[in-house]
Image 1 (cartoon, rainbow, N blue to C red):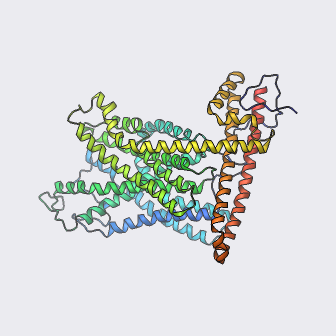
Image 2: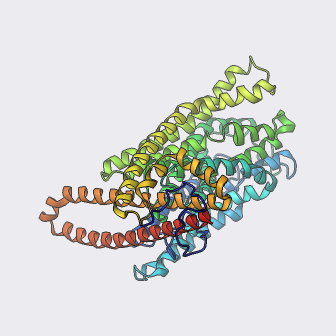
Image 3: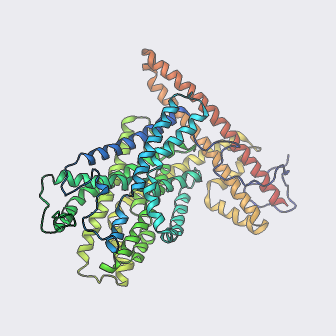
Length: 572
């Protein structure tokens, strides 16, 4: 029998060539099966996703209620502080431009309320439909889009005002997202999943932070200074007297609490995004690297929108304090691109990824809480400590000089983030080592089971497990057989690793289910209700196992098609 060539080892034109049965495929690496779906559609997943969205909306409505019932401390305050303007503020000029960046667009506010109403109506329709109806899945994702997607209006308002700044931030953010994707090494997330995480951070997470915090600032101001007399000697057009100096002083006194609120909301929103993505998307590996990558991608998206508004803000204020938008671009899109929100989002995601690996509820809660506390504390410390460090060095360093711009200011901004960045790198290193060990076991097992005719052969195992050998194989194939053969080989290698990732996930899920069943067996024998629940769970597990087998067969079939393509191109 003719032996198949080793993966990545270029064969001579006279060497054996496997028969060509199909044309080169261009199927993306994230496709798991012909005709397969990227989103989950089971009832449990839909229910959990809707529960998360309901919690977010519930907290937002609570923020609205607290803001409406707050004590009024300034003359002629509206029912909601987001609709209030400083008396006598000019309609044009720097102050108006400054205010427009932080004002809540009324269209966006009413759009969120409309989205809540639509989402509730869709859920009412879903309740009346059979649980296995495909239309229920479509309506569930539509309800999620209405409930949470409407918060993106706040971000879109900012991005639409500065299209050139948006374009300027795209290249650096795209490069950073590519590096985050490449950091996985094995068990890559589907590309749409990673892009959705970035979009969540740029649009929904940032919008949630803006919507919640603008309400919270007015609420905090009202409750903290209830009964304070703010009348003074300055008179607006209606004859009301307002002491603007004291008003601004109150703003500075409440900013600390508002900063804590904003940091908490931002990291909770990042956690919601990671949880929803893990629930919604089909993927094979859920571990600390999965959560870390999703959280970092969401943080990068948040940094994208935050950079646009920061650059625009400092450009507006340049005539008052000499600040420049170019410096903000350098800090946020270059020097600290992987700091700040990227690091803190990664911490939140890592906590969720670690929690997904354990079955004990107490450990899950502890891991998620630890990630959130670290991220919230880091975000607050970053703002406070960087300002404090800046005050210490400003008397000794010339502001705006080359040394300050290129070294000192970035160092001051990044210094409080170093401990958190170190933790993220250690978690990533540990997670990658665990993945490599699991990959070696899965690849070896797949090769031993499948034999010569399988998706992975024994002679191909060393190439798959060594990145240097895989790269050498690609370079050699490119030099001997051209770029088309090298691209086909790369797709083939990725498909083989996808098969290994699927096998690893199935073996781990089976081991966890067996361990969980062994722990719960005595209780199941004593209580009939628990036994019924286990029977239902077993039915769901059988269905999931069938879907997993079909997915594995599709992955192996795709790998075999790519093997044929590589052989045809190398042997031609």
